[in-house]
Structure formats: C-alpha cells, structure tokens
Image (cartoon, rainbow, N blue to C red):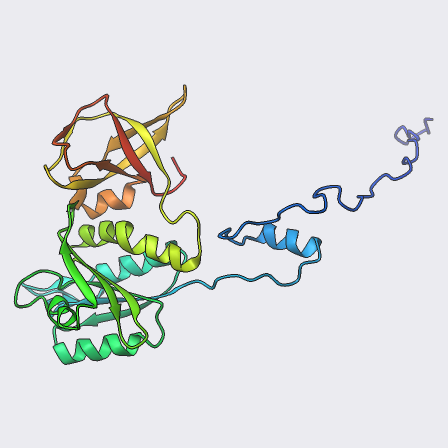
Length: 294
C-alpha cells in the first residue's frame, strides 16, 4: 500500500518453521576427526573444538631455541664497526628464522672467542633451551673456537664438511647433562641462513611435532641459465610464480647464493644437485617454497 508523503510498504511472509535454527551435527557428523596429530592450532580450529564441547587438547609447546653468535670480530647492530670488525647480522637473522619456523627464540647475543666463557654460556643455556643454534667458529683454523671446544667433548658434537653451497662445515650433536641438541652454523650470513633451512628448521619442526618437517617443493620451468659448482648441492635465491596454464616458473635472483638482498627478496630456493654444473633456461628444476606469496 502507498501513503501520501511516505515510501511504499511491502508485507513480507513470516519465516518458515525452523528458520534460523541449526541442527546438532549439521556441520560435522558424530565421529568426524577434527584434527590430526601435527596439525597447527589456529583460531578457527579453537572455535571448532569449543563448539563441539572440547575444552582441553594435548599439544606440544613451541620449542625454545637459543641463538648464539661467536667471534671476537663481531660488534652489535647500531655500533660503528672498525677495520677488521663485522656487524652481527647472523644472530638477528637466525632468531627471526627460528620464530618463523614456530619456535620461541631467544637471542643471547655475541660471545667472544674465549673458551671458558663459551663453555659456560652453552652450559647455562642448556637449562632453558630445547635447541641451541650457534653461528661462527665451525672452520678448521686456530681461531674457530666453537669447533675446538665442542670437538673435544667425547664426540657428542660432530663437525663435517657437507656438499652444500653456500656453506662448508656444519656441526650437530648434543651438549650438557640434559643432552640438548645443538646445530653449529658457519659465520658467513648467507651460508648460515641456508644451513638453518637445511638442518635447523627441520629440527625445530620435529621438536614442535609438526608434519611435514620440510618445506614444500615444486618442479618449475627455469627462466635463465645459471652455472653451479660441481660436487655441491646449491640453494640459490629465486622468485617462483605460477603460470597461467598451470605449473610454475622460477627466476634466479641477481648476485647468486651469497647475497643477503637476494635472500630477502626470494620466495623460493632453486635447488641444483651435485652433478649439475649448468642449469639451462627452459629446463625443469626443483624449488623449495619459502612462503605462499608468489
């Protein structure tokens, strides 16, 4: 009906019986598995648990990871470096990487190449750490203190040259009476981050009970020819994109595997095997996905 000076009114039918009601079991029938072991808890899953009457679930807490940088040559961020000194980028980067992997990370900071001080620091950190990650001192020189003090401890920590590029020697084992796992990474920043991806990140995922522990990978169409050192498995920063017709393309980033700026921009790591000396444009290669933003 119409009224002068007013809009038109329309009478709508009343709601049907049961309108606006949700029946028990309408969304998830009885017996439905809500989450498998290794599933990461998110807000929506918490809502599902609450809606189905589950007030408590057994979870693994986030692993506690301690990050230590070693070397007399290191100075902290914000301080002017003198000739022969290097700003400690590693401990900050590795702490961020551990958090991204799902850990509660603690950056201890810089430890000088003092054997007793380093031993004491590691012993102290075993009281609060589920995993210790160090950077620097893994080489064979007289100043590589991490290797010197840990190699003498009944073989609990092993240092090995690995067929990894960038990177040379990595250490792994346990320290302290609690036998806390330790991963010792090189001091070169790019090598430290690649070593973290290969060795430390899977360990964090394993401690957290996550499945799978490794990053997802895809096969991609290589857009540019790149050389690779023989006998080493190279992890090169790259940009991965999805193709319109399906599949992926991968573009190596400038500067090669040792550039921090390339790693900062990368959303994937191009993986070239030990037998590859040249990967030609148009070939299909393996790529580790660093995130889902492509």
